[in-house]
Length: 476
Image 1 (tube, rainbow, N blue to C red):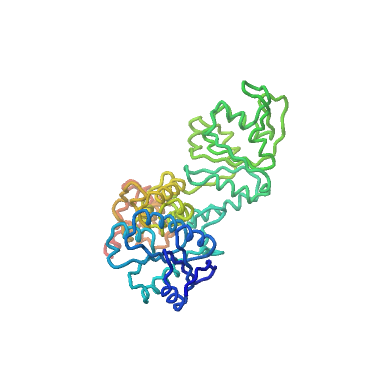
Image 2: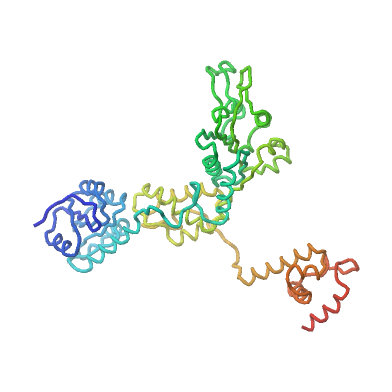
């Protein structure tokens, strides 16, 4: 006897999608330890999946199924975490539409006759893989800290510095390329400071026309200029007792720099058209992708304002220097936007990981997330491939062996030691922890001269008995 039951939130439930239930199939599944629930249509299947925690589905494909039927099934199957097994008749896998449907939407398939160990194995395998995908309460290892994703050493160093900046009220300047997450860092500092319960107000100094930036920062009174129909509170005043984040401060025009400096020195502002100072208590965090040291040298940024803003300095590491964080961020982006695609994606292929690791990411994290999101939409398989990412081909240059790396490090170390000690072999050898004879042999092997420029002289830094030592070394 076959019954249609509602899906229970159990570990061993299989949803069977077919026009009519097969009593023998239900009995076989029950004998194999599965609870079978039946859906006659895709709409019914969607409702059952929404109500219950169903990890495995079994869909029977009609012998003469059409593209419309497959599309209806695909819409039901692509947006859920259920793993599907298809039931087909012999020869049906040779149909191009059916084979593409199975590859894109199904975990596995079984061919008639179905009531055998092959079906039990496929269902069990699908169930096991689905269980691995279930979110864990405390994932290990953690994706990162402070709302950021990253486990590399540059990011660990950034996390430690964020903690240190949080306990003080001093201004912080965040340097870094575009797309590295400077605003995330600013928010993390604010959230770990005594001002965490007060406003965090951000303004992009490059996104507002210079003629309006001063009014946006300091506010204005009614009638201060044409179009000022009512009083407006500026961003600085809105951040009172909280944190003001000045993004892209390097693009602030000179006239605004002077007014901002006055505010930082005196702690007061005056609205445009106002007639009195207003005391403001804010903690200022600024950031830019511009090289401010060069901007100060070129006269594009005031040096006195720079020193006011840059009391504490943080540097956001570019993505190309974060190693394994690239794969970590790519998987994180995939988990965020997986539902944007028409197919149920399983993950990133190995060639996609290699392509991302070899790409320099000029747009950093922002570019990577957008790249993965685009690939989710454009991919045509179950895995995102390198071609889906659309990254330009990169040529990393010739491979370098470990021996070559060691040899270069040894040569550089000897050169630096010689420079520090004025090419006095005894002192350089003592610093390096080797004898003078060993140092001379290494210099000869690396084609390093005993004096700067390869010349010899009385003041070249050589010891008096170097000639004898060279002879002894050459014999050795």
